[in-house]
Length: 288
Image 1 (cartoon, rainbow, N blue to C red):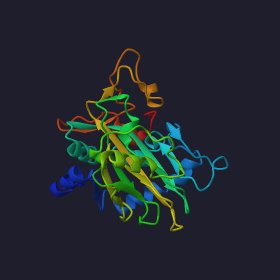
Image 2: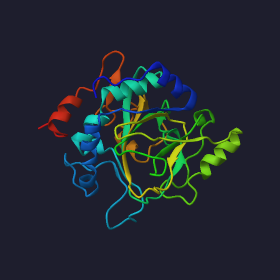
Image 3: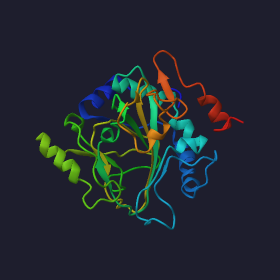
Image 4: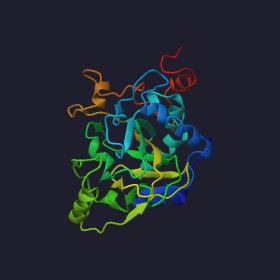
């Protein structure tokens, strides 16, 4: 990952559009290594011995045409963690957001099978009312070449300026994946301008937490895999009253500070980075 950085033009595009497409974020060889971890992960084979925080698709239980998702695969596999815990990606998210640094919120491993159904359009920030400040910037990385008809992620240009909407009621395979987006556009008096991210494996995009995005049906018959790294500000903490249904389990009683073990700091302008990261990547969760 060494050497990755955003240009001034790319930062300006992010400010204007709510996202910026980047042709190369990780080397193609890294994308190949990450792809190889998907089948074991979704079979329940976890290299570190820990299950991820969310594991939303199981073979034999769930329909084969649903998009498969794991959240916080970095805790289960160090090859995945090496990209998720990247200082360069953290620095880019911080720079785009005007933060002093970036803290990992969570990752997503997404695997849309050939002919896979849509994911509902949504704003990431609508899911994080349990964080102060409730801000998120994300890096979406394609692990396969993407195209308009392969179910790639699509962004609604400029939609980060439309205000914050409630969480959509259905995320996986909704009847109308654009319903919530179209309602938000109507409230804002705006037209929807959808931009599909078409990049080679290793490319991707950064997006604002309020930018509407989702994906349509995979019509190409080839499927695609992606890795998403969601970041908070390095200064983020838990809300003192709002409860995160899943990640609230990491809140210490009577405190709002986020433990770096679970929400590691990837990069700060002052040079701080969570001290356990390098040892974890070398030895695993137990540190043995």
